[in-house]
Image (cartoon, rainbow, N blue to C red; front, side, top):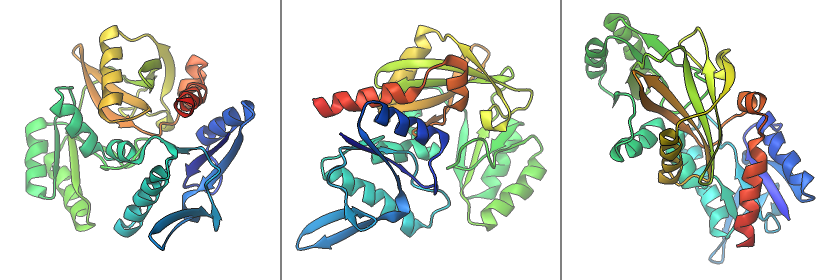
Length: 293
């Protein structure tokens, strides 16, 4: 069997290496493919996808880790359609590009979850700086964050509407859509729940004295057990977005749970350290079952 991990870095990340090692451990062939070396060719009514000028027909499955960041609209559209064409070849892509893109955009994913009555923080997405200003005034303490991003990079906590207005105006001038959330007063931690298929693989609390509780930002990971209610919600979220696996970030406030975001290509350094679980094992297990059926 042949498997490939698709990424946007010149060399594989820790998480991509976990996948490559697991694929090889099962005596399959494993490749790391940088997304910018693919090409699509339309000829005589057929679309052919190549990598480095060579066909990809022998590869049985692809694990999509990244399509890149800070992309132009044109490049983003091309890369999305590139992965669609790989799927049209009958290849398994994990996570599928449609689900991957739903999770990648916080506005899209939280909109879907809210429509299913899953609790998310009060959120405003707008291009109007005055509406954003009023949102901060009303909610007192807010987080201004990138609509597409990870690791907490670029997120700002603010409780002064006038300072918020200055920042918001600068973001608008640079062409950004304004994405604001009411701050959830979590008790010095949030939860990362890891789902594979219809199973909760495990969960950790990410504890920090900082309001940012990302491992990348210095939070400490602690293995935890979560209530059955939260397990069911997490599995439902994975299914609603069409994902095969995900890392779901949840905040607690006054015994209520709020979904902050859903990660379609989650990092798992902290999760692996705290739980001893390497998610690559269960994900490749799932892929093998999909191929056999």
